[in-house]
Image (cartoon, rainbow, N blue to C red; front, side, top):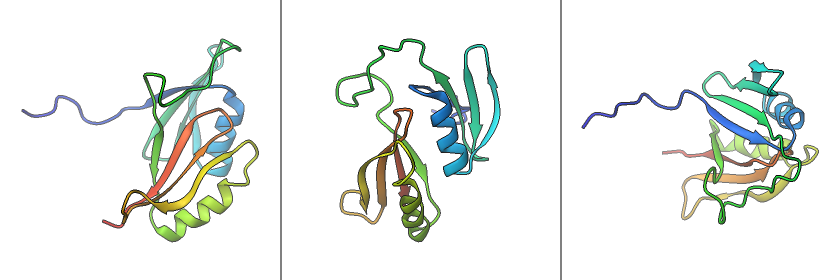
Length: 133
């Protein structure tokens, strides 16, 4: 059977702090704001390949996502072009305000993929990965 879809159009994510998350993606990772809905509020951002719609959580008592206890996003994985760029990005990201480092660059399983995980200031768990295959 042929797939009836063509890939992901965009990924919508609810975040704890819209401004901090958008600033992290745009100022630290080089993404661009491509739209949004101020009355929601939301911001749409893109790296030129992928689009994320970031939505401000409305419930201040919202619990942080627990990948082992909740249905939904486990993490967002972003491709990096080389291992050297992955290492350089880790050195930039690890000191960004509000970042929580889960692991520094290491093999994913037995390799050869190398990755690192962080939680960004708005609460999203992110993986950055380079796969030489």
